[in-house]
Length: 172
Image (cartoon, rainbow, N blue to C red; front, side, top):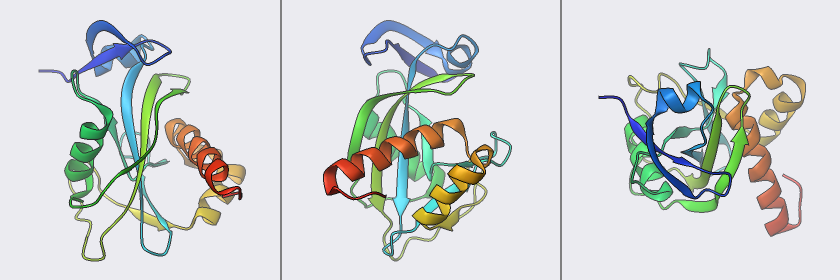
């Protein structure tokens, strides 16, 4: 059976319709996703070359929120499924962030965490590879080679930068 997700409006309110992810993408229906930025203790970010996205770099963890599920539960579920990371605390940056990605529209919940020192990524069916990059490398690539990233990553990374800057008063 196809995965079902909740359709939401531009205010992240449920419309009452449950649709397949494929239909949501085909018809550009707004539906919920999570993005988790997983950092190491030195502040480098793990990114994944997205299998479906032609190898473009994407969130450490990303996925659709199942129908009836909330953002936080989906983030923990996806993190365990995709990269095998458990036992860490997620920090919610924002939920209800609208990301129009040309061919689809996602309403994101964005989270961060720091990987434990004993965590070791094991390639699997969903994520074949992770790359560790400094924020400077990522931001430079976003400026010089934006096509190296998925649209969702670019949109959520810009939101991440905005939130961190507001909280700290410094540019990321």
